[in-house]
Length: 312
Image (cartoon, rainbow, N blue to C red; front, top):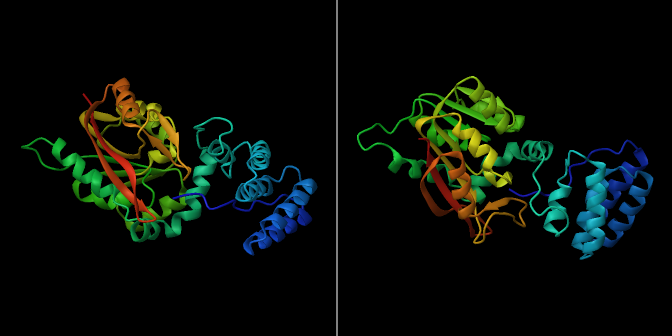
């Protein structure tokens, strides 16, 4: 899933708001130069109008004026400390500022709240999404040969609408899901798959869980870490909530280099060497790391990795 544009947040100035909407009408008709001119007038009226600055950055980028786009996105960033629209990501995409900035909670929550109602259809009908099935297949070889393919407790990180929950409900006696987006959690709740659903930040949830001494036999994260730049802290937190011998299975998008890369889709890709090192630093043992495509975009497979690690 990629960002489609700014979600309107009023400037508090009725005239500026009307000019902003007028500019979008021009852009919708293909008159991007006219839209940019109107947006320049708009931000002159309301200099702290982050939505208008972001739209101006996007239109200038569309017009091929990189330096002017960067200037507008910087203004959007400065006017919006919580980065509601994702201006920092756009700046990174344009080669300005931090190359792999962390996504703010506000940005991620808004992004998924906006898509929750059509999320399942978008992934399964249009993107051939198969991360849950790939994870399910990846953990089976890690189970004891004589044991049951079943877990007493499983935790679904970034559970979203419950697509992974549907794949794992049948092999988990207790299934817990956590997600930052209230709208996604609401969709998951309607499916009746989870014994417990929590709305909140993943790291905060894991830290609270560890402080209570709660443990899980299985922790999964399907297509979640594409929205997290540095995975080391969350790997450490997962290690603290896994039972001895417990499994941690997740997917990432990947690239051929090293480290972390922000893709044009505004998702993060994590290289295999980075994942190996980050897991080793937590004390988790790598069980398997397999190349796969968790989804297709424009009929092209997205380079991905399916990873399984195990607690000592």
